[in-house]
Length: 316
Image (cartoon, rainbow, N blue to C red):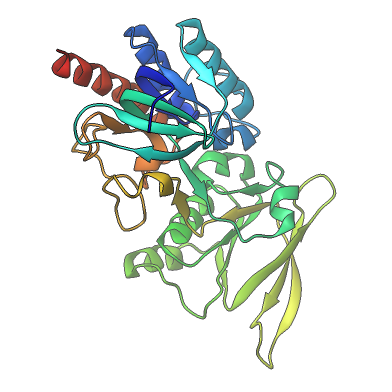
């Protein structure tokens, strides 16, 4: 496979991690090339209001925040392009080959992967319809907007329990929509849920859809689906939180990189180094715990510094 272009630093992904990596790599004179992927700006662009990112005392939107980061990276000379990585050939020694849109091949001395992780959805049309209007996949990000309101959390694992407990400190009422007749969560998380008086679990329940004029006003449910006792109901809510897991966008790298059981990239200690020299991972693609814009940005900074050090250490 012959390369069409050679670069010092190739950044794959354009969320807070990718753009921050581009800022730092540019200032280090690495002349980074960044490919934005299928969703320029990442998942944050579908978030309406952001009030917890430092430097924005009056808040901002996901689109504005990502646009500011992109402009800052371009100001320092980052080459930002639209394109999707369709295959890679990571070498244990030397440069790495990355194919863009199944046609262009780039040979990169270092690669920073910042492709993020996508929240799992139920697949209902209403999830798209009400995106940013009551539907969220991050209680830590959006819970503040539902103080003293009624919300629902979908899921029965540790993540769902954690989200429900967090929201119970803000919302007046939290419904947990659980498909089974028991929680899959650990005993300690189940105990924490049980302690919160404003959490109500709706057992053997699934979501049929959402309704509302200018945002989510309620959820249509089916209880004990497929049994003689099956029935439907409507529950008034202001917010609908999905907590059925995330899928890290690592499929294209799986052949070469060490991943954990959930598919997240494993990095070396406190660095962003992967098991392949010269390949680094930043942001949610390597973080199944925090998944915040600020932590992603921080790891983007680290990845650029790690890439710079690698280039210095390996130069002829």
